[in-house]
Length: 128
Image (cartoon, rainbow, N blue to C red):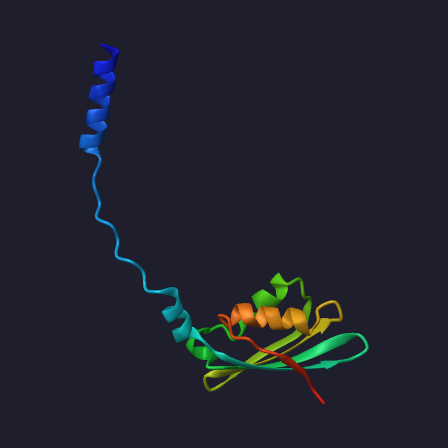
C-alpha cells in the first residue's frame, strides 16, 4: 500500500511538472568583450606623499555613460584610497585624473585598469 501511494505521488508530480525548452545559447563571451573593448593610456607622477595619475580611456563613452565609474570602482576594489577624482569626456574619450596614497602604486592601478577595461593591458608610465 505504501509503495503504491509513493508511486502515485511520483506519477502525479511528473505529470504536473511543466517541461520547458532549453534557452538558446548566449553569444560567446569573447565577442561581447571585443565589442566593448577600449584603449587606455596611463601616466603617473610620484610625489613625497602621493601618486598623481592621468588616464585617457579611448572610446569609453560607448561602453560607460558614468564617466569612469567602473575604473573608480576597481581602484577602490584594490584597496586604493582615491582623492581629487575628476573625469571628463572629450567626445567619446574620457580623461581621468586623481591621486592615491603611496600604498596604492602603479601596479595596483594597472591591475584595476585591466579589470575595468575588459582585459586591456596597460602600463602606467612614469611622467617626466
